Amino acid sequence: MYKKNIIKAKELKKKYKNILKEIEFIGITGTNGKTTVTTLIYKYYKYINEKITLIGTNGIYINNDYYETINTTPGIEKLYEIILESYNRGIRIIVMEVSSHAITQNRIYGIKFKIKGLTNITQDHIDYHKTFNNYKKSKLSFMNKSILLINDEIKINKLFSLNKVYKFGKKNSYFNMEDIEINNENTKFKLTIKNKSYLIKSNLLGEFNCYNILLFIAVIYKLNKFDYFTIQKFLETKIKIDGRMELFNYNEKTIIVDYAHTPDGMEKVLQFVNNNSNNKILTIFGCGGDRDKDKREIMGSIASTYSDHVIITSDNPRNEDELLIIKDIIKGIEYENYTIESNRKEAIDLGLKLLENYDILLILGRGNEEFIKVKNNLIRFNDIEYVKGKIENNG
Image (cartoon, rainbow, N blue to C red):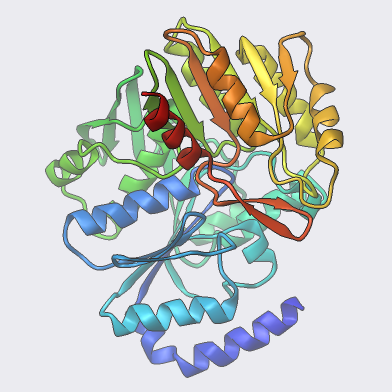
């Protein structure tokens, strides 16, 4: 099957070789942060009035036009349709999220990326890759033959010395940040590039978003689009990344909806909330079916440890029994601070009912996904839309 992808990619590359030469491709991979980084790049180009195409988890944006997508990275034929449509509209830069599935299935075979970024590597998709080492290898295999931007927390081997590698992070990196200040309203840090320092301030919350912002800036810098004052004005425009740390006020209470669906992602969100609030924290989450079973128990432990109360619910059970998935989650819970409500809508209703003044409700795992996947059915349900509706109806 994947060899067919290579054959098809070679055909399409030959057919559109002149078009491909004129387009700059930016690929961002990693376990968490891909959507935020690519969306920041897309929104920045729109901010400076330049055309761009974005391909990722939240859909496809060919300049201003939006199209739904099922996969983070589309199949080869769909990808070339997007490339051709972008070219015909005068777009000469395409930024995309690159999933581990797309890498191993050769869905991006033949695409020459100008810049590749690696956000981080933590546990995910073990159901598909079988081992964490295989998963890590798939990510690292993508990082070649381009300008490479790599999180300084990731250990890299000697092969990377053959490429142009620029690290970003807190360890005397090429793109370095220090003096990080985080509260529940904004994030600040000092950015240093080539011994020049800049103050970066954004409404995107949490240290994990400092890394996302840093990678975004690194990409913009390597595209020769870096202008500090323009970037800082852009970052101060109340940027919203759909389904990522979306905050809602609800009668003196706070609701946060986030896509965090891995142990690392969940822990970082919960750590941020705990570090910036002394109020009661309620967390609603579930785990997907037909996916990495090992992370269920871990996520149960994390949710229970960092939350005052946990509501365990359904999250894309696919072909598994949602109650058995919930049982797997409960194995990791050490405290009697949880409730089971397998119906996600009713779980959110319960969470809202339990909220008292100044409490915080976290709804994790799906972000702004449009459907819940049950067997072969797609049931339309969007956490964010549902929360907005409840707020509008209840004031």
